[in-house]
Structure formats: C-alpha cells, structure tokens
Length: 134
Image (cartoon, rainbow, N blue to C red; front, side, top):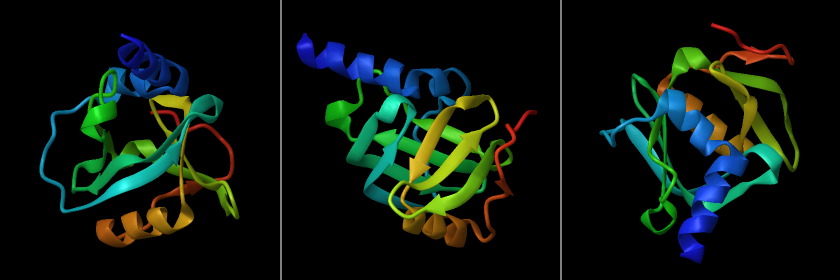
C-alpha cells in the first residue's frame, strides 16, 4: 500500500499526472529510444534512471520502468508542443516547456536533449522564457 501511495503522490507532486491529462498515450514503436534515463520535474521531483525516452515522427515519448509505473502512464508529447527554455545549465540540464502544461518543467541532461534532436533530425525550437501557448 505504501509503494502505491508514494508512486501516485510522486505523479501528482511532480506533474506527471497533469501531463497525462493531455499527453497520455498507448505504448508504441519509436524510431529511437533510450532506457534508464533521468529527468527532473516540478518541486524537484526526480526520475533518476527510470525513464525510457523515445523519438518518433509524432513526438517525444516518455515512459517509466514498470516497477515505478503506477500513476505514470506513457506519454507522447507532439513536437509542436515542446520548446527549450533558455540555455542549458551546467548542472541542471536543459529545461523543456510543454504547451498544454507550461507550469510543469521537464528537465533533461543536455546530452540527452542533443541525442533527441539528432534522432529527430532537427533542433527543438527555443524560447528565452515566454510561455508557449497554442
């Protein structure tokens, strides 16, 4: 019971549950994917070495290792909804802002963002700090 409670609380506190409202997806085949990746989200919630990050023509996919998946459905975020915010920090990595949830930061290591851009075949659009609105 404690494991289930913690998993759902992390999804709510970090913002994954909010992202799932707009970006929930069924698992699908990515062009390229990286397992055991890390990200940080709202209120310093960290997903260390439990993420699978994928690139497809449709967008960026995120899923969590099955042991921690409760409350964390797979996500597919369309490329048109993603913007890099500001420059990549040395220790904090690159922050991505999502159009339908601009208050939920999604921060990856800079090297992972570079791999994502190479696999996609083009860079992710960048903004200085203005929210992306559709």
